[in-house]
Image (cartoon, rainbow, N blue to C red; front, side, top):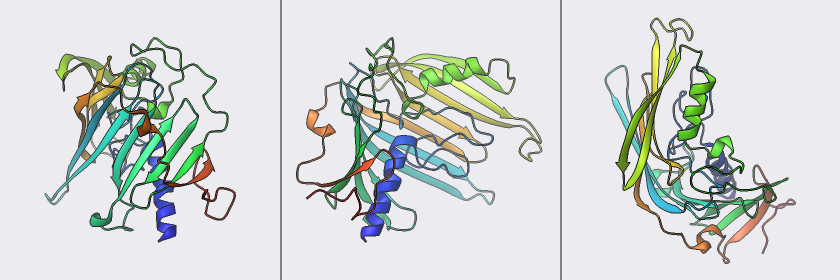
Length: 291
């Protein structure tokens, strides 16, 4: 049981930072876009990726990710994943989500995990709410001495890691980088109000030419993103790939209030171990739990 919990925390911590491993080249299972791969656009998008280090744009929301895929025999696979996210005015972020290790835990025993990223203190936490345990990750060469993004308009010069980007700016940047590539096309979808906030829409279409991936005909992958300048976060995204189906991720019940500071701290009654930034160390070593 202890090995399972340690493995759960390790894998889930990686998922929070980078998104979980993609399924067959598609989006991650927890509302994240997986890392780029052959035939996939080299961007990360969607409200599942919560931007940290954004000052003066606090909010909280529910995240709903719905995926659907039709198999060759006509069978349909549909999945829905929900989570709760928070970001404070200093750019700290928190995600609460039930996590399932593939095959290691039945659905009824999914672990309720909490992931906290505090760029101000240079630490992150992976917390197991059921076991009341967790791991503290301390960054080497952390970002505490660097400037954070100055405001919600994005005019600041603070660091914005690729793993914490949320679609809007990255999709536009990708369009510029691939402006000469006829297999990439970007277009504006205009503006609309989504869940009470103004959002700007953009569409990225990537074409895999016939024969490039063993395909007889071209494959068209379409990513729609609706990015809120006020929140500095994507509020709605749609990823459509004929090989993997469709995934829609949206923010619901958006609240613009400042979340409580205690949400970004490890509870005092949790047993917390420490690890250098990366993966937790096994119990009994230098990163053993503090009593």
